[in-house]
Image (cartoon, rainbow, N blue to C red; front, side, top):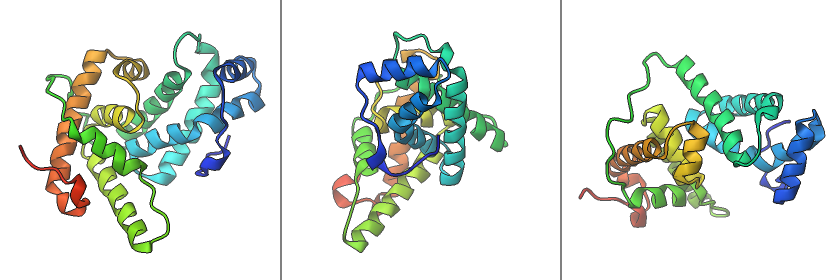
Length: 219
């Protein structure tokens, strides 16, 4: 159940395949579970990495998350998204790791529900998923942008960060995020709205590092 950064090995599972591998995994079939690992390792690793910010740590926590998922897969009852269940395991482990390594408690996140910042999610998604190949100067710029986005995410309180990553980078719905984080869609909306506002302010403060067509301006 190793974690690989090579997307070429990702299994393409149909819904029926997934259900079959889950059922076999629930009976202790490691080979079947490895198919699920190959299918989901990139999304799980991405969420953990964006939560923790360190590649080595993210690899370790992702590995631990898959091991925990295998041990606990009998608790998955079906009828809901397996991806959401798996991301719940991974995000909980990432959050636990983060809290253990921080000296101050997480800020309370759910006191306000503010209007969404419509430009921030599309900006985050565009910058995160853009892969640049060939031109060394463009590749350097891409790496710098990735670092900027990660630094901005790390300024968010933990629960806001997880919600923003799941919504604006991984594309989960509010309902899926609520299921993943074991909270309500209203709470998710609050966390995402406040996280987007903080992220928007961070990007405005560092907009000289963004490509011109992605720069944001104060309203």
